Image (cartoon, helix red, strand yellow):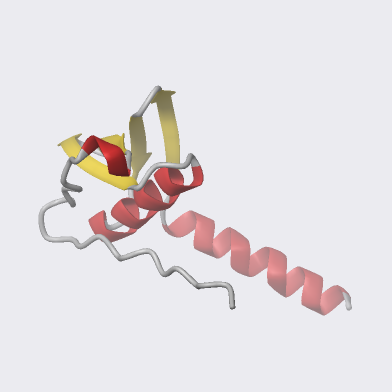
Length: 98
């Protein structure tokens, strides 16, 4: 049991050492995310964060160094979700209750 806990702790530390992603500012529908991850990982993180806040997804605004600016978009605003250039926005999978 101790070996499993040690391996779990070690692997999580190794993964967190690879890159970090955090939200520096969340004001209304604007998000400032600082990350050393790949652009696709940042886009996925921003999209997931906005969807968790009941938005349709994240629309990329700008990048400066390791800081990414996003706008969370609602479906009724009729705005297009813009990905980071060279990345894609993965569609949300919805399951229907039967």
